[in-house]
Image 1 (cartoon, one colour):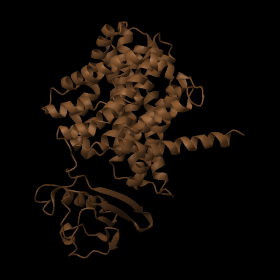
Image 2 (tube, rainbow, N blue to C red):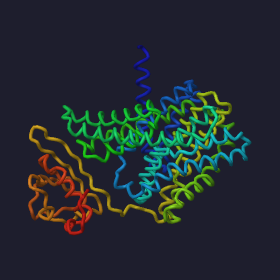
Image 3 (cartoon, rainbow, N blue to C red):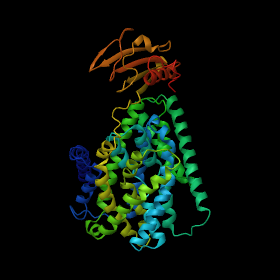
Image 4 (cartoon, rainbow, N blue to C red):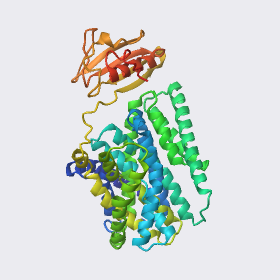
Length: 492
């Protein structure tokens, strides 16, 4: 008990330092994830002397953090951004994983002299792009919606098949013809469970009148965690169930949806910080020096051979421009996930697993520094900058239970067709009205002749009976303008 204030103080200092590291990394132009890793190394045996070498505990805590990161990824991913990328995203997260495992395994078998099973295990560990790295780095790179949606969808889904492959290869059991069927079952069952938990959670939260606003984000995250545990207990993919449940919940008409997304983002940052500090604490700088050569060889194979080839083959059914394929190949970010996956064979006592873990540390540091710091410049070089694209309008709802009404908060994004529309042309259904417009920090009560502008914040009061129709009308005008109905836009 006497050590509790000290431990909490150290935790607070580490967390505050990590938060400030985000600001530093933005100024220096490289990913903050490496600073978190550096903080962990500084606390470890080579720095302050904290000794931590429990791979089983690291694996368990790493998977727990990954569940929260995938929850944040699902809740903050907008369906409008990824639905046009469903085909490429799904193939990149499945077919590309298989191709990457095969290519990486074959290359490392030849270059490093690994036996075939261990070489394929290396390939499986390195096959997954990292959700934390993608969600934190990619969204600041300024690429178009289609490309960012493809990469976010891939990083949210491909952890599942990569995890299954690592578990199978690390188990030492014989691989037979039934393995593809098992993998298909686990992924399909995880998808079904994710959809089920997402839908049931949405129905429950929309009908629940919780006594405090802060309970809605907690309940939403709890649904995603339950999806993971249920998936694992059903021998399905809990990671896939988590991401899909978050995706369904995040794109449903939940009360206080904006607050839930903000809470999820904060929780995702906390999970990323804790995970990378923990992994840095586990790392041994002395062993990393010995793993420098195999780590650099594996990094070169992944970056220059396995990733481009897997992107090329998996996207053959689609007419994807060469510039997009180049960016997709370079943007296969590796972060904490490969390190967490490498802990599985280490926990199982697989021969050569320690060398794998150390090499993955080297690879993650090199590739995160190289890729993460150059994505924005590559996007501009390939003319893939998406800063001029119109963004989906933000609509948040808060229930007024005693009045049988709801309060909608609407923000008009840059490029929205709502810009220039007179309030009378909005034509909301009877039972709804725009009660307040906030523009440049000042609020006013709008009249029918008031004209909406970009960056306006609207407060719309509506009865629960027409609430859905109101949001559909606002979204329709946002996409197609004042003549949305004539242009066949319903806002769904």
